[in-house]
Amino acid sequence: MKPVVALVGRPNVGKSTLFNRLTGTRDAIVADLAGLTRDRHYGNGRLGKQEYIVIDTGGFEPDAGEGSIYREMAQQTRQAVAESDVVLFVVDARAGLSAQDHDIATYLRRLGKPCVLVANKAEGMTQGAQFVEFFELGLGEVLPVSGAHGQGVRSMIEAALERLPGLAEPDEDEAQAAPDTIRLTVAGRPNVGKSTLINAWLGEERLVAFDMPGTTRDAIRVPFERNGQRFELVDTAGLRRKGRVFEAIEKFSVIKTLQAIESAHVVLLLLDATQGVTDQDAHIAGYILESGRAVVVAINKWDAVDSYQREQIERQIETRLAFLKFAALHRISARKRQGLAPLWASIAQAHASAMRKMSTPVLTRLLQEAVAFQAPSRGGQARPKMRYAHQGGMNPPVIVIHGNSLDRVPDAYRRFLEGRFRKAFDLVGTPLRIEFKTSSNPFKSE
Image 1 (cartoon, rainbow, N blue to C red):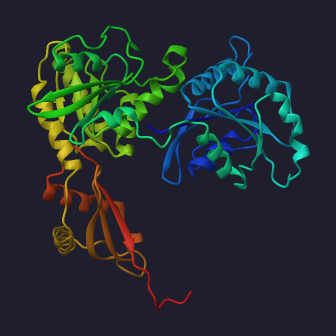
Image 2 (cartoon, rainbow, N blue to C red):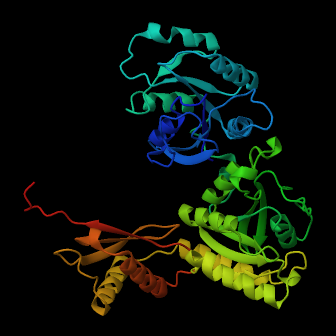
Image 3 (cartoon, one colour):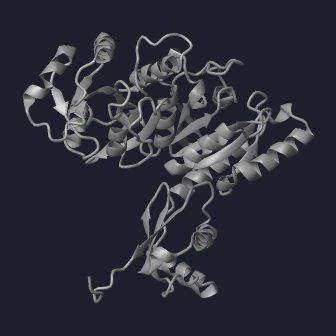
């Protein structure tokens, strides 16, 4: 599993700026205004070959009073610290030490979690004497950085990852899984029947299933074999909306679920027929698609709704989950064990599609046939010219197309090519990514 790094500190010390720097994005809103960030914000970062997850948090006030927004922000920060493997405690090098910094340091020392003290906004401050006061916090050496300019950021994340013993060792759960084992993650909102479905597959009450949202707190892995094929079934906690995840007992739920989706070969997205397709279902589906995982969609509790409700949910799937048209759709009842057998055929097909090998000659021939059938529209003075294609990766499949002026290929034509490739290779249940590589003109003067 990827290590998790949490950014913690009082308001307006530059945590979101560091978050954007570590993730290489602009996902976190940055402004010279205290209290701008309130919820937890997750992002992916990389240091060499080592990937990690970063959590941005709002300004932390451990002793915020009841009923205030700062109380809720503090709860979000406590959740982030609980989910993390190491904490980056960010202070303001220019504003100096404050009483609030002391309160946060006392909280972190009491937890005993690995912690790195970071003095942000330290551009131009090279004298060690300027950081002496921060040693009062009792958290060891102070690392001066500048999130805005990128100074010292690499050393900071290196120091954080060095605090995690055995980081280079393979994940224990992944090491135990055989190479031919398919890791199947069951994901969805709370109380849609994920644990009930896995129990039905296993034929025993292996997991606690109860009619109360949030029964499952962690990602539970169960080995399973069917018709000679080995699986690792992963039951996950239901993903709630950010604003509703406050209980300390759920401290690992979100991050464990996201990690389980990323490490899966196939994700079974479970919907609740009695609740319809909600915005949260669409968010989870979007995360699965963004992660590039193969996916099968199942509507649970199909036996509990009438014909009118069934018609409504079918329409909702067509509109809210239109971006998952490539995924197989099943209507099941986990409690009554109805419609479960066909799921396995779709899971196997989705996995096979995600791992499909596509030869360069076949891809190039299909590309040439597609262009002959319908050439891409002209963009500016030049028409995009596609020369050849090859496979650039699996799980999800990636097709790389080379040619000239390909930066002008419209999205509609990309979707046209995707449809042709999907049909030719029978790709069902997996995202397909198409990348364009434009050749440089050696005669073009710089």
